[in-house]
Amino acid sequence: MTGRPEAHLRAADERAKRGPARPKRGQGQWALGYYEPLNLAEQTKRDDDGLNVRERIEKIYSVQGFRSIPPPDLRSRFRWWGLYTQRKQGTPAGITATAEPEELEDEFFMLRIRIAGGLLTSEQLRAIAWVSERFGRDVADVTDRQNVQLHWIRIEDVPRIFEEIERVGLTTCEACGDTPRNMLGCPLAGIDRDELFDATPTLELTHKRFVGDPAFSNLPRKYKTSIAGCAQQCAQHEINDVSFVGARGPDGLPGFDLWVGGGLGPNPHFAKRLGAFVTPEQVPDVWAAVTGTFRDFGYRRSRNRARLKFLVADWGAEKFRDVMQEKYLGFVLPDGEPPPAATAGQRDHIGVFEQKDGRVYVGFAPKAGRIYGHQLRAVAGLAERFGSGHIRTTTQQKMVIVDVAPERVEELVSALDDEDLRVRPSAFRRGTMACTGIEFCKLALSETKMRAQWLYQELEERLPDFDEEIRINVNGCPNSCARFQVADIGLMGAIMPRSNLTKSDGFLVHLGGHLGEGHAFGRKARGVRVYGEDLADYVEALVRRYRLRRNGHKTFSEFVNSLSDQELADFAAPPRR
Ligand code: HEM
Ligand code: SF4
Image (cartoon, rainbow, N blue to C red; front, side):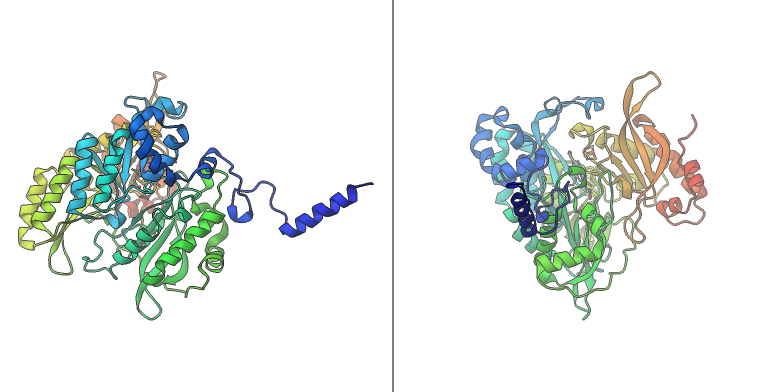
């Protein structure tokens, strides 16, 4: 008996001091004391904050070259400054899942430039254009989170690029990585006739206060924000981690309805309303409280469960609100009424529309988000010539020139047309989005950008009189960067076997997804797999069937959601050859 009872008592004493027993297998939640990194990504963040890589980029890697970059910086911390190695050209989809990182990665980078709320001046756009033309082989993508992503960037050029981007007040800081990513806003903030109020000052303040703040630079996973006062809710609060949705408060004053825990990816969740009303002045503090809750309670054990949506799904809205208010905010927010649901399904701002001051805005479509540096430069010039030098990017991979005098619209429309930028695109070009795909993305299983362009061109020829809203989102893998679950026709890249025992890329199909009123994820077309080259035949068949069978339904997604499972299977079946 000697020694043993005492040890037992000491242990019990220790346990009593620590509080209730912790679950044996923790989820890596810091707030519960699980600080030990449980995977490589967490270890890398613990070893050194991603923000610190900036200095090494400038002092070492840009001087000594690509080979001098150690893997933890190259494959993790670089993202904190918007850099991500791009896929080696020509690497087949078949090796995506099995190849070693060095087999897939090229010595060139993708660079994401964040554009808070999608608001740009012509000077800023010209700087992006200059970087694209001079350092990025003239390629640029307008993304569905209002950013511009460049490609072909060499590490040697990065300091010069940072200098130029920052000279005009833009940044790549925390454009990727486990950080607060670009904050979405309404591209028509301040000019839209129907907006509840202009949320730009709130969005800019929140961005300025927290982007690059080391208090929030090691989150469990990526973290997406939306702040808008727009009536159509085009900033997609339903699928962001934290969203401030324009609403009227108890006293009728403008403010925000708070939503948390939305996100797509392979396991999509719609955000939950917390039922709390937030005044514009409170937004930065509430943002910090929600983000702090995520930072400390988020599940860091597995990358697949680390997004805020999993915590919110487990806790529910009420508990999340209680913990956030009590432990982080320090006061209780008043309850608020939900804002009226948005009615428009498209929300892409394409076309010519009157602003509240009588001038007009002109929205136009690049090609499934792909645009070129020289086109961006032209757009900057046109915004100065015809507008006030302000340009906006949308969450649908589109752009808008604002503040145009009504009598000069047609001149601007034809100048944009000369640049192959369409103010009145076909329904198919207008409605098609594509993720980065196999051209540059190391996770891709399918080609997307070029295939999407081919697809809408085919559809334009085959169905020239179709002029309804239709959203066709082409994705290269299940990660859903181009949001296949919330499209009328959502295409998800996959590797598919062929009868000759080879494999090639193709797509699984989700139908009828949409945001806005009655938001719903697309329904899986079970058993349907479409080879890339058959996409145009398949989508054409769907559109033709929809026109024949719609039976008074106003939109594609409304029609699809009216079908029984059996009717859906019949509707979604590939055409017979
Ligand atoms: C686990 C890996 C990834 C997941 C789960 C994921 C998921 C997502 C999701 C859900 C969106 C947001 C769509 C929206 O809300 O509008 C998005 C955006 C995006 N993703 Fe990914 N993604 C992943 C990796 C990548 C990679 C490797 C690339 C490289 C090409 C990439 C490129 C993009 C781009 C360009 C956007 C547009 C948004 C922006 O500007 O931030 N993603 N991703
Ligand atoms: S959806 Fe997949 S293929 Fe497309 S950009 Fe995202 S990770 Fe890459």
